Every structure is written in structure tokens, then in C-alpha cells.
Image (cartoon, rainbow, N blue to C red; front, side, top):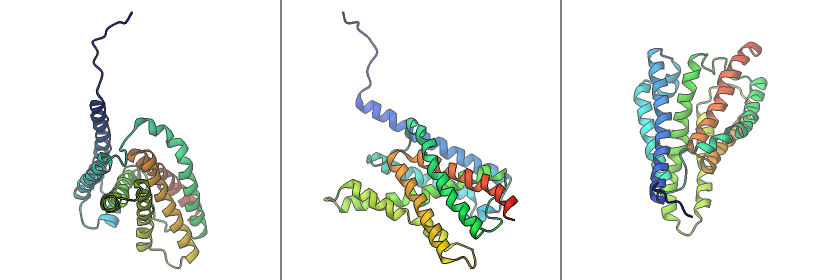
Length: 246
């Protein structure tokens, strides 16, 4: 005997809309946290923002970055190319963190061979707030926005090319942005060429892994991977290196 039920089943469109709302709410939650961290550091200011933003207030920069991030992620997600957030994907973060440790090992190797400047890292406790902010800014401006600007026209212009191939090509190109930026503003003097090449490849690998995570999983997973790396490099090793290298 079949028991009737009055519980309505969600249509496919309703489930999609519900999933979309969750994803945008997740981005909003992350963005509000970053804005909150910025407000706190504005009360207890740090000169580190000036290195990246110049004389522009972070209270102006961060809202603009949030809007750029939302617009770009909306386009990428609405076309079905990328996901913003999937709760299940965060279970993969411990496994993915192995790559963060490997990348950290490369940075520590360079630090031992030809030490980075003593003041490369912001001291604790401001670092706990500062690096999540900068990680968010970098992932939006160096990854999400350029990827959107490349993908939208390329997909429109290359009708006969596989979309996956276009996305992979764009990921390779966008992976170059962060190492090029780092090289342009590198203040190291007398650093051997092989270290520049090694560190450039390490940074390229870092960006490529992040963008692969973005494609394979979602934006929140990509950002979380950077936060894990920043916690290891800028905060944990940032404290240890002062004791053993200087």
C-alpha cells in the first residue's frame, strides 16, 4: 500500500536557485569577514597596507575588490564554468594542504639559501587579520577577475574549440600573473638568477594549483588553500625564521 504524502518535492529549477543562493551567501559571508578584519586593522592601523594600496585607504579598496569579485564569480558561475562554494569540497582541504606544505618547503629552502628580508612578514597578532585580507585581494584580483576577462571573450570567439581546453589555457595564462607581479616588485639585491627562476616556478605552481582547485572544486576551497599556505609561511615560519636566521 502506498502512503500518500503532502510534502511537495522541489523542482529542478527550485533546487538550482536554492543552491545558487547558498553559494552567493557563502561568498557574502567570506567577504563580510574580510571587511570586518579590515575595519579592525583600520582601528589598529598597520603600515603593511601601504605597500600594496599606497595612499588609498583599505576601507575603499576592499569594498571595490568585493564588488569585482562578486561580479566576476557571478559570471563564471552563471555560465556553469566554476562553482563558488560546495560544503562537501572542504573535506578535501586536508589532502590538498599537502601541496601547501611542499610549496612551503621550497620557500624555506630559498630562505635558508638566500634569506628574504627580515621584515618580510607582519608580526603576530595583526598577521592573523592581515593575511586573510591580502589572500582574498590576491585571489580576486590575480585569479578570479583575470580569468573572467579572458574566458568571456575567448569562449565567444572560439566556437569550435572545446570549452575545457579554453579554460585550461586561461588557467595557464592567469597562473603567470602572481609570479610576474612578485618579480616586478622584488626588492632582493644580488639574488642569484637560479633563485629567481626557482621561486618564479614555485609561485607559478602555487597559482596553477589554486586555479586547478577553483576549477575542480570551488572558490572557497581555492581561497582556503591560500589561507593554509599563508598561515604556514607568513605566521608560523614567519616567527620561526626570526629566531634561527637573524
